[in-house]
Length: 162
Image (cartoon, rainbow, N blue to C red; front, side):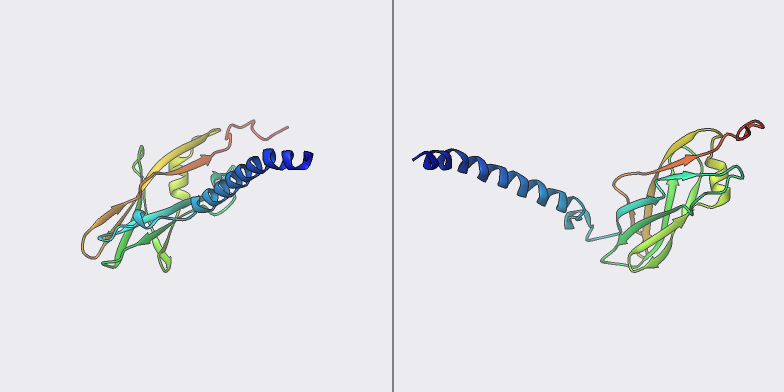
């Protein structure tokens, strides 16, 4: 009798908990999945833009500790994509992407661009938009800006000396 009462009370709670766990798991699994609605049927679509490393650290010679690159997936179902570029919002710096394979494109931040963007003894975050053009002249724009963080060292004469 006592077990039946506990079963009637706990069974609905257990079902609710299992349902909550299952829903939260499926939502997190879908967060990395791109919906077909994000892809344009008539021109370039840009998805999955990412910067590696997330913060570009520079040494005292303003060389990056790790090779910085920006990757993006560009899909176009109607025409060949021929030009992909990244334009920083606040500064006059533009990078041209190169096709890596399939729909993946890569841009590299070179030493000249890093020197222009670095601010001594600070981590500076920039936003940039990615644009793609196809052979038919149609232009696609990423839905959200890419965030690029650059951490520059203190270059004063006394920095780093003990």
